[in-house]
Image 1 (spheres, rainbow, N blue to C red):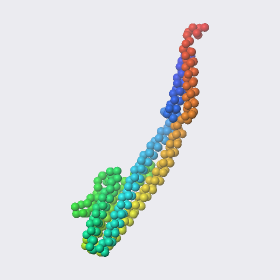
Image 2: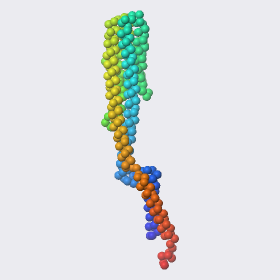
Image 3: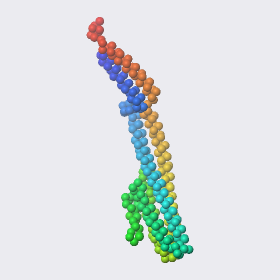
Image 4: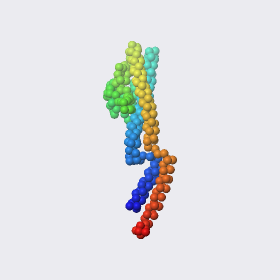
Length: 286
């Protein structure tokens, strides 16, 4: 019985040393559920919330990059339209330059088609939810066909919030003002010296500029939303990390002290065990 008692004490002392060693080496006071079931459950919950937040932050990074990219494309479109307006205005007083102006406008129109078929991360940004094919196709007769749709492509950035990451082409290029038709009509008017047609074309270009400005405003609003949600997630992530540290991290100074004490206790228990092991039946008969 005494021998079995010593063995039990040795096993207990070894477990105490092992636990202290694990805390010192890992820096954690809870390495398995049995260490502290309630703390372990909290740690699982915190880690789950933290992983969810990390995923939302990745979504936000993608959304921000795509929106910034889209904003840049809208800037490019605005510059093309500004140049088209300038050409229309110049054509009034330069009849001998009509052919050159018409040629430049055709080039600008092709540039707008290229803008409309811009892709980000391998996906077209102006095709609505149809992102794997060119949204706009220039036909043999120079007309332009829209092959996308008007559906939105929201991205989840929190449990309760999603953000739009693009503007459908049906809302921008071929919505209330079909910019491709306007540009083609302006080319025709300049070639014919049709001042009323040129004036109408300039007016339509200015209307389209307002459409682009509205798209800019929407994209800017989406970007502001991502910034606000990202700030909330960053704060939440910091809170999760602090809570996780409180639940999981070991007090190293205390753990080292415990390790030293448990090692000394084990050595003492082993010494007692060695003495017990040396006893024989004759020692008990004395």
